[in-house]
Length: 439
Image 1 (cartoon, rainbow, N blue to C red):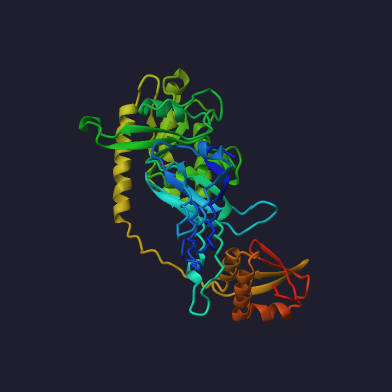
Image 2: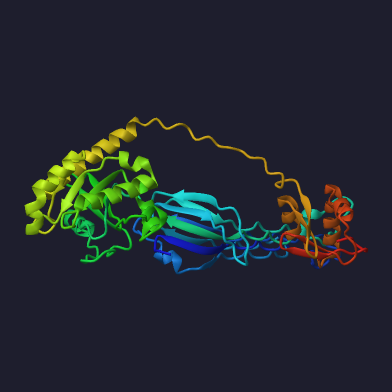
């Protein structure tokens, strides 16, 4: 896994338990209930930090847990809320529920959201709400309830984070085509440069002034993307790890290694990989540069290579990052390409997003399913209710049993063959079915 991906476990804090307490004051021998509510558990939150360009820092924290809420107290005192945990991520981060959830469990991957601009926040695990104290359960016929709710469990899940860099201009080409050297010549970035393939294993970013005479008011972020080889769309080389980064760039720059044995053929391989990834990528503004014109052999073959690429519909710019040849022409071409990209964006009429609502029968409903050694009750409402019951408390058990009867679950359990000793599971709660209280 590269520094632009992370697989981490996030656990929000559980809500604090409500209190089952009674007033104990002088001259008030039979004080009423005064149990306070539990505090909310802390959330796990992603927040965009403008200065970050990789997920390396996040990957170092394999398990992230927020603080639980405090328990309620006497005199209706409210438990403290748990502190949120904030993970800082770079712009362009996509968060989704991971298919692999540990202990062999798999779920359908689901996108949680994406964070694009500095300051954007996304809650990836919500803290549980605090349980209510016994003061909430007073009724005209029940003046001294001992029942108080437990806090709701916080959400916990494995999530995957994937970075898709948000850059204005992306340099694409075969390995060792000179992309990193070109980035350093156009910007103040200082990427690692070497005379071997895959020197770049993580995208580098730099900022270029589009109009130097305008005091740098117009700038563009340039990304030097790792080299693409044949089969990259299938994951070969650095394939999938970095092809995703071209998806958000406005302009692509075709970088051709002038010193290669067959520069035009090398580019055709890259072009095909882009097409196989997404044919729309080839429709973006894409100036072409041929690098290393300072080398005598490249300088000598340049006229022939330029004509060959021109016959293929390209107008290449010959450059040398070492002596500055062609850089001014390239800057002008990049400025024009950016203007074209911005113009295209303005002309695109985006249709309003259509929100699709799908009925989930388990939101308010329920079902009873057989398991190897018992029965399981599934349904969001009943699972949440079970999580908040203190089964050590007789009054609380009675309230939960009446809930099962009111919802019809009790009858379904009996129909499914529940008998003394049958294990009944509801969410994280495990109960042994009994004759005396039936749950």
